[in-house]
Length: 419
Ligand code: GLY
Image (tube, rainbow, N blue to C red; front, side, top):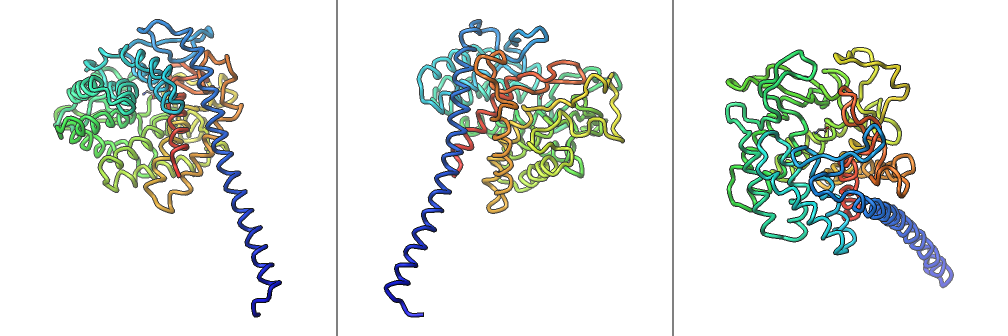
């Protein structure tokens, strides 16, 4: 057909309407995303403004809600001290409001002596979430020094005979079945980010080499053939051989503890970012597949605290009473960690990354819903409800946890930054 005045007009009209629809859809999507991020940060500002009026002792870092309903704190020696300052840095990053910077600096610097902590591996969590974010946003040279000293302390727990960082000192296993001579837990993957940072800013490759050695061992020893994960691997300190493997913070030794899986997905993604070794990305992706394709993952993608609770073939070796849990508790903290990790992982996978980004968005939508997001002034001023600390210890069951908030805010910022 030739071009008549009429069909030119029709084509322009059709293209016009088409473009209009596309523009409307794009605008709708962007608006939805922006609204969600804005709404969540408004709530976070509201909650943490209140938190700052309650938490005024700089030796006590907000962590959770105690069984009697009050705000529970921890000290500088615990693994969770860095998350509150880290959350304050994320509020500053989003709002650019100097009041959050001042609060973040105050709470970060309250952790200064953590840089010398050599008694457990969590110096990475504590110092990198606080000082690490502080350095990223301010380039304060004092923070860099603290972070290098922190990496030095963490590195003191590395023994080349084993090739991993010892998470905890030797002790009886939680279930009393073993002695842990050289225990390494999957969570330790998260502490490696501090080491990569320290090598970059100091020029000393030692820290990075330790991180890579640790990550290779974790890939070999913590990750099962189906890409689920063990919690604890106990090594012989003389030979570096694996003595036994357990999942003490999960349901049973052969089960998959949801937050342990989340630490693995996040940790291996981060190690891929720092090394560009595809084996780490592949491990992170397959661990994410285990999580996302699991028949026991609820539709909102916020996991039960362990993927195998009450299933045949999984037998707890701690005092588990199913009647106390008519509803299996969810762990919003694991979901927040996974959402943040998937936003990053999706950027390394080209077109294959789309489904991981969609899953990350879905998790954020779930956590942003009234099912998990606290109402202003409730929840002891934490942002998210419904996390689990350690059910085998009978502690922190269906409560807010400061690290759930931290990774939720991080995921929102990653969502905001992605194209
Ligand atoms: N790092 C301890 C936990 O995830 O509970």
